[in-house]
Image 1 (cartoon, one colour):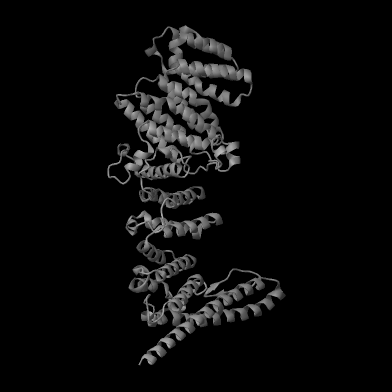
Image 2 (spheres, rainbow, N blue to C red):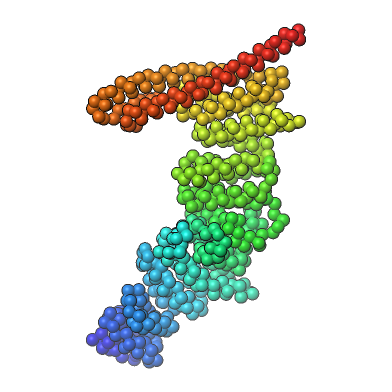
Amino acid sequence: MAVEELQSIIKRCQILEEQDFKEEDFGLFQLAGQRCIDEGHIDQLLEVIQNEKNKVIIKNMGWNLVGPVVRCLLWNNKEDDKVKYFLLLDLLVKLCNPKELLLGLLELIEEPSGKQISQIILLLLQPLQTVIQKLHSNKSYSVGLALSTVWSQLSLLPVPYSKEQIQADDYGLCQCCKVLIEFTKPFVKEVTDDQENSLETQRLKDELLKFCFKSLKCPLLTAQFLEQSEEAENDPLRSFASEIIGFLSAIGYPFPKMILNHGKKKRTWDYLEFEEEEDRQFADSLASLAYLVFVQGISIDQLPMVLSPSYLLQFNMGHIEVFLQRTEESVFSKGLDLLENSLLRMEDNSLLHQYLEIKSFLTVPQGLVKVMTLCPDETLRKKGLAMLQLYINKLDSQGKYTLFRCLLNTSNHSGVEAFIIQNIKNQIDMSLKRTHNNKWFTGPQLISLLDLVLFLPEGAETDLLQNSDRIMASLNLLRYLVIKDNESDNQTGLWTELGKIEKNFLKPLHTGLNMSKAHYEAEIKNSQENSQEVQRSKDFCSVTVGGEEMPNMPPEMQLKVLHSALFTFDLIESVLARVEELIEIKTKCTSEENTGIK
């Protein structure tokens, strides 16, 4: 029945001119053709399509059958049927109007979700390429539309991270990346072959450039790459990255050119007119590109050897900042790797303090602090700490001084502040051991820095437990200064400022310790009394510390926490006592020396 209906429509349309086809004819042809496919009359349908007399009809109406044919290819598992469906698809791609086919194929690519996305892309990219190559006008627009549609669908697929996931490729992303490269190659070749650089070629180049930058953002920004060299050669995502960078070079945007244009007001890609959201994505793409070149080593041999390590660091700092602003571990870990790669090129103490006037040179270490304090992964937290120390090591003395002041004012984390204070101590130690003192870590400059270290933010009411790391580091620094710098020499300026230090730091610390110990001792007593009640009721008890109620926990656990706090206060008190003892000994010796001189 379906075949007869199709033959009837064909006979009626054969006597009409192409311009006389009506909307009703298109609908009836599609309906009859679909029924032929559904009922398995593929051989008869092939005869109709291959009949030369029906050439005009198929050219105008045949594209409506692409959807049903594609669905059969996806869902029909019989190999004999699939051969016929592929033949049917090839004929339709060959004979139908390419403009209508283009839109029909893109609609089919946009439809699916989940694992079906890769299935439809793998099936239709080759026909889509053939259709676009048949277009004689406005090809650049069609290429751009096709690449944008495919990329939008691929961006919905999860990016495999581990070696096992990459090899399994459950969602087909790796396979799609491979065929997408093959899809794009002929259009890249068109650009490279056009020596005259026509307007249409320039437009095609624009579309390819956009596609390359989108690919650098997704999937390459979050992609993880296999490490061993022998495995790296078989890494599909690394191969995709290498091809994308190769496309950039082929269409006139090699990576070295971007480096040499870095920082210039007029960028070579300004004509793309990125919107605000696209501009942010563009920053992600450039960061991804920098990582691929410098860390993964893709096309790094194209870089000029004359570029200084400080120039490359300056180029990469903005990209590192982009990485560290992201929350995905797979992304900001790349920022740590790129920073390490850039810093290891430099000698210690060689990074001039003037670089800190560039915004990213201060925001990057602040980003490292966030990684150190907020990242749930211990390995990445340790890497963040190591990178901050490496960064400090590369700065000159004034740079170190400036960064220390910045982080002491902005970190708001006792452990980070303790780390900075330890670094200050190390710099003072090196300065005192030199023949010529370093003015940034002795005298007036140091005193200004110590004002940020040797004080309690809220005086005696400062939460000593929360600030214990910082307080212990400050006391150890003060103890070191008292031991190493004699009052008669006063190289550090400590002895001149001793009265202020006692007023702002030592006395409030005494008072705070007494208050805190009394409070926690009272809470221990209350907890012990409550625990007896709890044992009878077999329930949890609650304790209030510092005005805040501790989480419900067994009495023995709460007692352990409270005793731990008391131990911390005892430790601080013992170091404080030792510092005050040393100050007394030093001042007494100086006083006796002065008396002897008289």
